[in-house]
Image: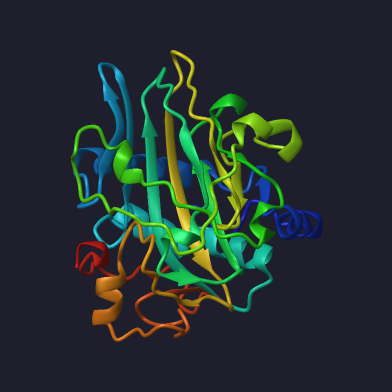
Length: 299
């Protein structure tokens, strides 16, 4: 397993990320990392975490989501602390250091047609800033109409939109689902589907070893329409740069790890560069994977 990207992030890719809030990176992860993630996801499907939930589970079609399990899965810890992901995030962000927030998996069985609602990520988090990267890695190839879609430049819109309540998309009722509320003065979320051409919605077909990286403020969603013989296994990691701080919110929070953060003594406005959010880049002890700890999401 190569701890460095198979090729460096280019200046043009870093500029595109800053301008558009999203970039596609071709051929940066070797197949050993993808095989490790696939083993971890298969185990995760057998052993769902406290917040694991189904957004669709009807006959042969299933869309499963889980998050905040990295402390319990050695495969995830190895990837987070030893793979090229943190270096890639640092290169795109131009950050002096990168801290890890949490991981998320998405699993769709072949033929599943459930799309992801259009949303932003950061308004649901108990942290905030501008310098963050979400690395979306498929374990296999992804067709363009199955891939996540983005509204370029929307990460810089100075708007406070109403939040989609993902608790409404949990037909089985399994798992801890957090109910969100809208912040005062929030606006109706834009109808992206009706304005796709105007907004310049983008997505990319991906091959094994490719990934997309997006700013958590960008509007994204859609995709998820799978061919009969094509499933989808995605490992998504969230990385924070220099300007990120603790930001408790009365609205949002999914996953809600604020209780564990408060128990760790984190106050509103504190830097995220602390033990609770491990610094992964620059790497101080290459090859060392932290041991299993209590799952913060369940605390």
